[in-house]
Image (cartoon, rainbow, N blue to C red; front, top):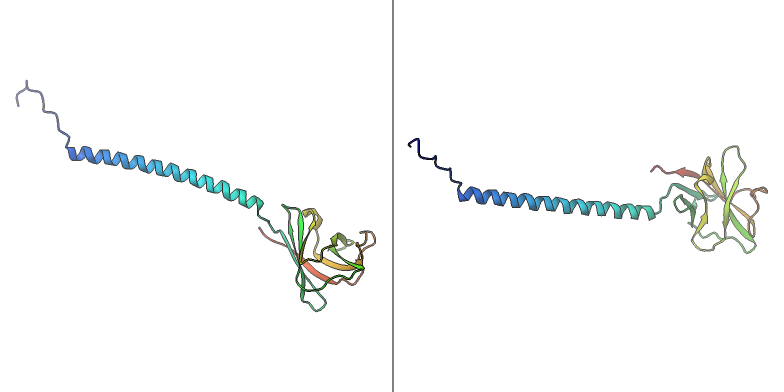
Length: 170
């Protein structure tokens, strides 16, 4: 090579050019796929959060037992909805002139009425706030005159059904 001749430009092989274009396309498709998957994941999270917000969250559970220690009522508390769900587990029904009344029992405190069971169906709901169960260790059912009794009067003893109140861990 003479000093006056320009140096030959290195030639790029068409093979390497094709590989680099293909690699760039793969990177673009990968980035687009990642962005799409990220958006789908965000949408799934939002959807699951919405479903979780409307799913009943049982925080308290109590199985009330009869005199023979057999399950008679299942009581659960959903604080989000503000309801006590009462489910009959046996066939005991109140008489025509009687009502069953649900009581919250706390150590050293008088019984507090949580409501009167008015329905003859297997399940019913009573309105209740989570604060109504604070400090409560047991739930009980008493048989009262039709319509129940005021809280100041207190329940008729002995209780028909009684059981421990359990606060569920989340």
